[in-house]
Length: 120
Image (cartoon, rainbow, N blue to C red; front, side, top):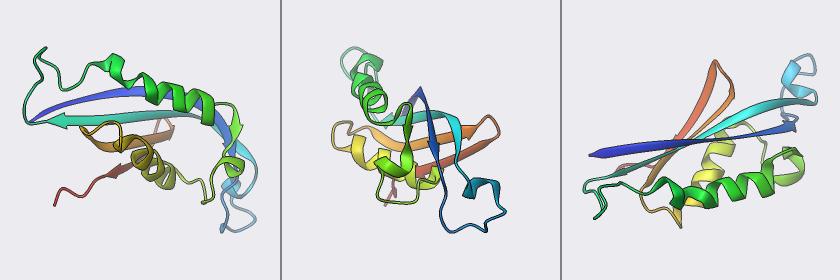
């Protein structure tokens, strides 16, 4: 199995619903997000790639146009936790990137949430 990944970044604000009022994430705050898309394949293509990294330009375009410098509560119909964002981005990109098996969302250098497709 061959695996590759590529990182993308954006800045955005959000408010997490359902938390106690004293929780800092219940207030308006922002993050410098790092999104990592993970791809895998049993076989390499004719060039010797899982996928050419340049073929992931649509990920950058989506992030730049839809998420960067936005208030995520205005963009999403769900509570914009890192976990929910990872699942959403997986669903958005999977239809165009068949090698995609996971999306990782990092809000800080010490925190990461991953949505990985069921391997069944």
